[in-house]
Image (cartoon, rainbow, N blue to C red; front, side):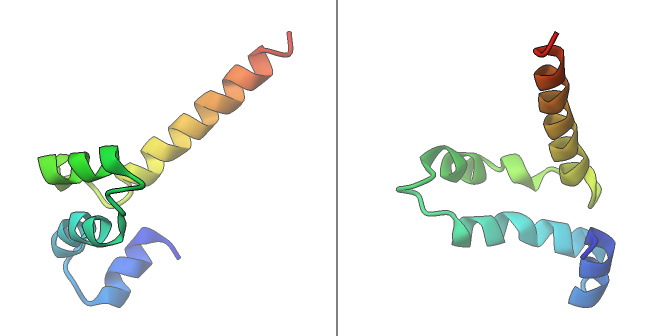
Amino acid sequence: MRTEAAIRASGLAPSQWMASYPRMLAELADPARFPALTRFIAAGVFEADDGPDDEFVFGLDRILDGVQALVQGWD
């Protein structure tokens, strides 16, 4: 489901939906397994006001960077 569709389905405004993300992460992240993530959440790193697709685009860019590095390694 696309992010925009998920936001509409939630019944929340986009800013409200994005604001709920850090709380959801805090509930799901086990501090014993993910101590760095837990510290990032506590520091407010995920509370930046960004667009709903920004995280997807960032992640996709990292994946494509990895594919590029792999392909370049074949030379």
